[in-house]
View 1 (spheres, helix red, strand yellow):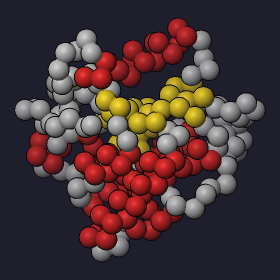
View 2: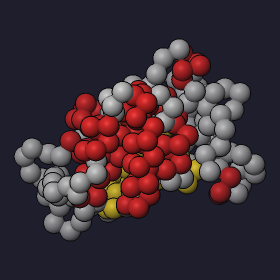
View 3: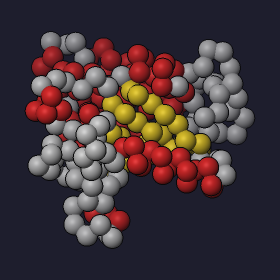
View 4: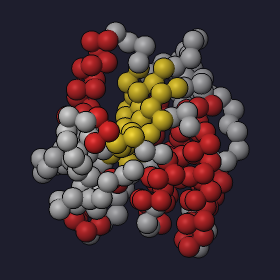
Length: 205
């Protein structure tokens, strides 16, 4: 369940006892829940379509793991700053498949500067095959960064499983229905996420 925004217009860092894991950020949710909660405008639906497309492309490359979702997309930024979000911030904690090696061109999801124009996602990767100390330091960095707004307001974030194919299909179906109100503008992006993709080789995160 995605908690309601607090008085600051952000997801709360916890919804009860902060010592209880299920009551604290990052909250485990489904992509269907994300679409139902945040697919409230054409701009937001375009971002969600891009995120679903990126998730499909990552799975097609054999990537497994989970993702943290954050940024102004997960805030009531329309009320706070009278604007729509421009993208969604995502950190993917992943295990690349054996033999995952660099090729040219690299898949767009592999780096933030290519993921943002391709998917509307400000995307970063943490390789779970690294040493434990490196993973802990990465989690400390991203947790600290994602847990505060630019004004240093404490906030929460969301966690979604990357390899939940059925959930993504349900999310795509919901997004298609919602996008019908956009004059069809978002539907080509949603439709692009439906066919099975040919796996792209790329550099290990």
